[in-house]
Length: 587
Image (cartoon, rainbow, N blue to C red; front, side, top):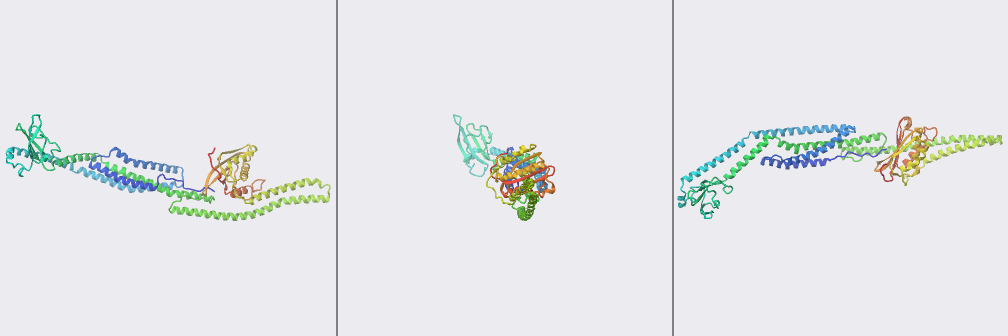
């Protein structure tokens, strides 16, 4: 009987968490792609180092998880664990599927980026923007020439006197006219202003004759001409260039500079789109897919491993095996059916054991009758001999009475011992309510053997120091003594006996497993199936009831006993008894 089998593989990251992480990556891809494209196309900025580091974070974390999974997987293969080859075959196929699915998308993406870059390199947008800038400069020059012609060919003072300078549409490019006089303290005073009030100045834009340097935003869409022909008056004449001229030329300059920078980024470094695509989406997606594949193969293979190991235990005759933590799928149904089958086999085995026990009891009754008959015959013959001597020669009867009575007493003692062992075997033993510290009891029980068998080494270092079992000391002593004596006889009084304790779980209960290992001659194959049979013994002296009595005591206390043996190497007996106390560390 072995402990209940449970699934021991633990996934670092569940499939649900991985799917959630995948959705998170998709969301981050959408958010980051907007920021990335905005910086690249609108602001002509490549990815900053901090942003690249952020993009590397998710793949790095996934690589750590993948490395742990691969390490555990390789460890399983090296240790030749069950289903490791099957799991590697599944993972191999999953990776092939991922590569086949991702390759076309990756190639199409690379090709698309290459085509877009090639198309971009062939566009003459930068040249067109340059031409637009040249045209704006040329337009500005033409306007300036037109304004100069106006000033040469127009008598400004006469037009002011006529009052038609701003009242007609004859001079549509004229924005304003403003005269300044200088005060004694050196400041300027506006003495005359005509035109749109928005273009009125507080002081002359320049003191030299000619067109003044434009100052934006004050001079938006206009140019100012300073006339200093009259030494007492500075006249400022403002002309409209075109509505939106400065805004349009500024846009042309900005877009020309931005396009030049963007063109340099794309043509000198063709990878920003690919780098973004690989880091943010493709690489994490492939890693998640591989991790999900490993999780899936483990989820599929682990129940198969459990079934395989449990089947091997059933094949060895252990019908207490049960597989816990069953998956909620078809494999779970299979495992549940397996558990039901094992339970039914256990019931069938118990029924067969009951039938076998009835047969054994019948055999035991016949054997007991035979064993009782054997000492009765010499008792009868000895009594008849004494009686005949007494009747024939009473005086000489005293010569044989002592020897005859000793022989009768010896046979009666043998018969009494036989009946006592049979009574122990046949009488039901209720489970004990008391507990016994198993190490203390074992060390006390083997104490007499230490001096009697100096060539035998007893090793109890692997026993828990604070572990109690639910059995009284008397029955535990009977179990230990019988098994120790058998081990001593198997080693002919020379060898090692190693005793250890372990904790196992069976049917959601804890049991103490005591193992007693000797280095004796072992049990031959012909005797293995007869060890538990009453009256079977390989010793010259013995009733053959020792091991059956031990099995009966252990079974009645809710435990179990079995053994492993190899001829020439030794035998190990295993005894499971219910735990009745707490456990401390081993010494």
